[in-house]
Length: 90
Image (cartoon, rainbow, N blue to C red; front, side):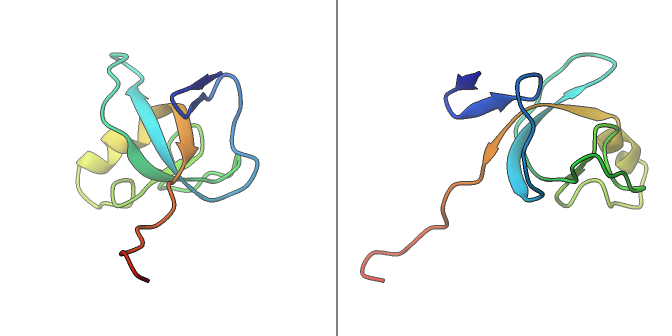
């Protein structure tokens, strides 16, 4: 279930709406690319969400032809975002 911090979507989905680091696959080819920051909408769908209910930060809401590409991705794994950077001495 936990693979270097990654949680498989087939094992568990997030329990609350938040931003996560998420890995998506192309539904038609199975290609898995680099992780995105994505908001899990807990089953809600909008015109900007993927079919399984994720909004990919700065991708899904584009108004060009690439927006359809992002909507057709499926999340395969996710993990919480790391804690924010803290400069030394602060």
